[in-house]
Image (cartoon, rainbow, N blue to C red; front, side):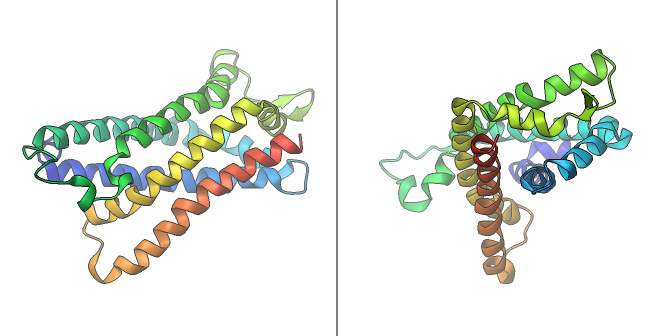
Length: 224
């Protein structure tokens, strides 16, 4: 693709995939936060069952999401390699730490931590769903006559080690988003007079969403 042959094109594509994943993250959070509603999981079960059995979601949006995740991480690694190879001036002559934040210099590491979490999350939730629906052929969403999603969610957060892994992953996600959100807006040219407002919004999003997910994990761990 011609767009991906230039540095600007790769950054633009990276930004678009970032916006897509941030929108998905917001939608995912909106559903998961209902699991702490005082209705014993009724709202969460209904939303999860709809998302898990809707044809548009399963056969169109889900493959696009998987592609978006893979594309974003692969493009991130490519950009990191390109940036490293382009640094012809040593740090002794050009102190990178003086011109950039710690997070901007370590996006690759926070990205790897998030990738490890995504794999864990797939093992916890996505792979069992694929097995139940597409291998076993059970699309009912039921277990012992009741929708199973809420109780499965609670069960996953019984382990302190798993909860700790989720909390650490969301801390890395917050740090990744704090830099990535602004960087994505800059890559598509949405700055200048909008910079102050975008920075405020990005901070609210980058901190609020991960903290919200941490609250969900801790809530179910201590209230299972």
